[in-house]
Amino acid sequence: MKIRTRLTLQFLLIGGMIVLLASLAIYYASAAFRTEDFFNRLRNNSLIAARLLLEADNIDAGRVERLESDNPVKLDDEMIIILNFRDDTLYSSDTRGFIDIDYSIIERIRLHEEIDMLRDKYALTGTLYISRFDRFVVLAAATDTDGHYFLNRLKMIIFLAALISIILFAAAGWIYSGRALRPISDVVSSVEDISIASLNHRLSTGNGTDEIARLAMTFNKMLSRLEAGLHIQKDFIANASHELRTPLTSINGQLEVLLMKDRSETEYRIALESVLEDISKLIILSNRLLLMARTNSESELNPGKAVRIDEILWQAKDELVKIDGSARIGIELDENVTDSDQMLVSGDENLLKVAMSNLIENACKYSADRSVNISLSCTDGCICIRFSDNGIGIPETELKKVFEPFYRASNAKSFNGTGIGLPLVKQILNKHNGTLRIESKEGEGTTVTVSLPLRH
Image (cartoon, rainbow, N blue to C red; front, side):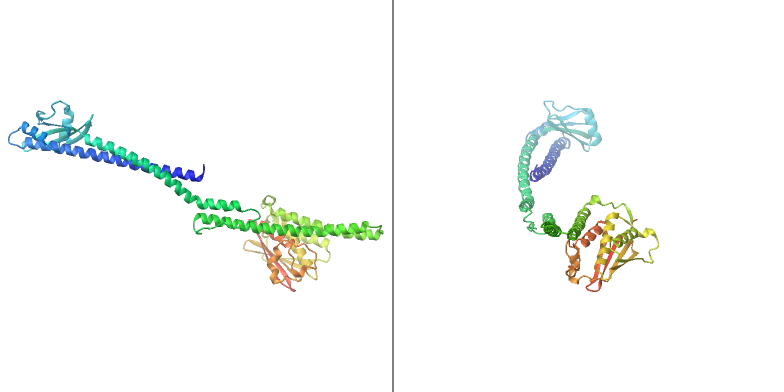
């Protein structure tokens, strides 16, 4: 069921219930008022007759009958009976005997002074009349013909008014829901027009204050993120393709030249060593691309495992020294680090090792003396690892760009590299709720500070 139809039905249901309750309240209130008014008129007529009969010096029933018959406010089928204290009938206009004198009712009248009741089609009222001589019971009955006619007309009017109101509620609900949902329909139409080729389009935010505007703004923010992500993906694919094509083209070219004619053993060896070097670069690049993809997967991360960050640093140092014997790596513990628990973090040991190895390798690569100083300290529930070198540094205008995949600083073009190291490190640290800060001056060196939350 469409939202518009559902809202219309809900509007109709609520409106119908309100109309029904209001109609019932009006009808029963009118019926109660009409009944009360009829009993009051009947009682007044009976008391007037009793006064005429009982307050006169001589009781003249005929005179009362004549006055009653000429009474302009006499009610339909009105009958009056007056009884004395011995229950003798002093006066009765009930010639046909419709009023059944029930002595239990007479006792109730003497006890409560007034009673009202309905008997079949008659309304019966009883009143205790106290004169200067005695206490009398006055009974009166009549048919409320006008009241029944009035209530029947009222019932018809209320029914028609309720029916018309329900029809109006249905029409108003349909129109109102249509107007209320029109902005959503506009948003849906706009979203349907947006494709992968038109992510730069944005939805109208209307007045900018209501819920629909907030929905449109949320969509626009999502589109901005998708557009930015798509641009990053395109750039990443283009750069990755370029980086992969370069060693593959080199390998292909060298092998074609090698096969053009017979070569000496020395020439074959030199060519194969060059090809092997290109293949090694290709393997390193592929591994780093796979690691970047892995860090985007939540399922690959094991945040519950305890990892000692100092052991990772020592392992990374040993492995790098084996590859590059000229690398000089110093590791120092701050004096405030007194407990092994102060070096425990939660995360993936292999990913953290990759991050630390990349930072150490970069520091050594860009330093003329191939050295890096690493210091560990513990502050505010975090362990801080500082990597300091005296290398070529990074131009200040390029500090924010070094975290973009495949971006390389302008003064680092002569060094071997792919531009994936720092973005990969940043991504790994983000997965571990860590931070990475770089301070650098061109020609003076670089300091990279890594902060990771301690394991609790």
